[in-house]
Image 1 (cartoon, helix red, strand yellow):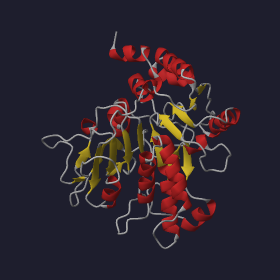
Image 2: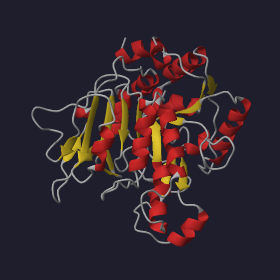
Image 3: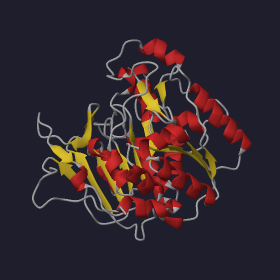
Image 4: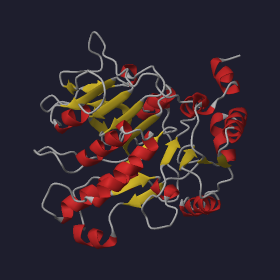
Length: 376
């Protein structure tokens, strides 16, 4: 009997922790093709036994549009108004993500052609938590991508709370000093590392083994297996899977471009009507976190903008700060991200003279962050 089968047979959602009632959404047939029928049956039965709502008959449209799936989940939310959040089980080819234009029509008209490499298009799951159809999420949404790995799905669903949460680890680029002040609000005594000089393969090898992990590094759309630092015009690898924590229940927040992109194509490059190819844990730092039992990995599905000029109170910084503040105040990470988004959108644009470019960047910031993992 393999270790994976033993873990599945002994499945306990959230390691037996008491959670608020959640709506779990998947396409049972599609999920079974990716992680096996036995594992799919075990986890869905275990979720139901824990008292949660399971909607496992989701169907995508023939054209690949997420609209029918979003409408079906909205009907489920109307039927079960007491649920506290939505958890999507499976990658984009199981539960389709929305390929979303971040800009309101009035702003899109003003911005026109832009220098943003994504043209302000992102992958988003927020509409699955939009109960009233006003394009603002009302409920927390998290996603457990399958990565074609039963072990990953089981580990993420069984994520525990950390017995001792007074520990922190972080790495930032040398050109992102705004992250230091945010990192100092987390419990623990570790200092924020910088890259350079920090490298993934330095000796002795450093570890991000802590309850709370905060990363502000470079990421690439075509390579999710690492995050990069800065050294002049060079970009050394700063974080790979070997640097990740081994403990379960970790909460990670990342201000890394494409850090939570779990498919091969960013939204701007995805062909219409075709589900993008899912990455495996070996191809994704985000999925590697979940495979190790992280409670949540929060990050961006597209290029992210960070402040580089004092007072560092614009672009991504206010959302980073609001997320960690909510977590420190006791919110589970999925809810903390929703609270941070609501706080962020009320103050948009932040810290700058109002202009179309700044407003567009902050609308993108609002839309591109997603919560991977159970999130509760």
